[in-house]
Image (cartoon, rainbow, N blue to C red; front, side, top):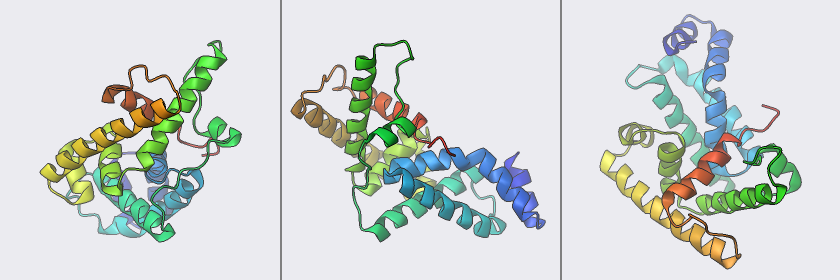
Length: 218
């Protein structure tokens, strides 16, 4: 469904149909965003419910000053950051137990690949996720929106309601900090740091994890 159709339906009182169209188009990406910002799949699902409620309530006021995509991600980012503040957490990642690793951090390897290689890849990605969640929320939000959601700096500035130079500064600090934390964690645990000294490698682990961040039940 086109964004204009979603907005039109809501304004004409077709509330359920509008929200259904919005959810079909954006729910998966918003859940991934929540998972990346909150780090915990249960919290992400709770935040998603709040996001959809706020979308339903706020959509009639949408003025079209930005794309519906940018508007929705601004709303979702604010919901997630406020949700985390209410919980009083700065690091809310869930332990990588068997259930969560199967549901969320699926292996990168193909079924016929070496299981030891697959296990190591999953563990490295988990360490990168933990490092991401230790970033200050302003840096984490910029990094997620830019490097995982492929948003341009100008779009991120609208989402976070800051200027573009602030976005670029936060992104630079976030990438540098994340790389240092990942290097330190890998080396401390004796994990192979093959390629991790470049940010591109770190991003690959994050983006691979993000693709698998939606629980199977959604």
